[in-house]
Image 1 (tube, rainbow, N blue to C red):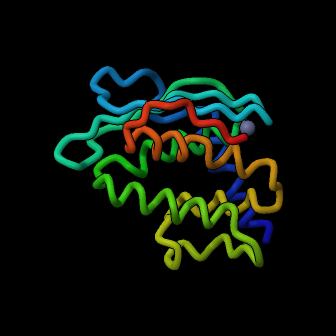
Image 2 (cartoon, rainbow, N blue to C red):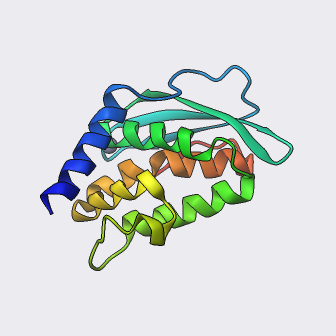
Length: 153
Ligand code: ZN
């Protein structure tokens, strides 16, 4: 069990300290903002979608380690995926982190989430589920093209 916690902590620490794809994406043609008032997380997600495929992704904003790490890992995970694959990943991720019951943090293969599976660790902290899913809600809104600010409340 200590290995699982270590993986969870080192992965989140790594991505929150050194966020990938951080900054405004100038080529973006889809964007959405997210706000989690409960924690104070704010971010803007940028996507460049071409031919039904997410060509690149980026984000900016400020928030807690979990929201930042989740946004960072999202941008890596969805780049190169089709819009429908990205949506499916969002659904899978959301069910995974908000899921009840025994969390098996190492069933990466079963979930298809890969590294994102470490966020299963937030199940123990229900308040943190909103931090972990904020960027994903923003991505879903950006893909839907409704341009609204996503609030977790
Ligand atoms: Zn947060």
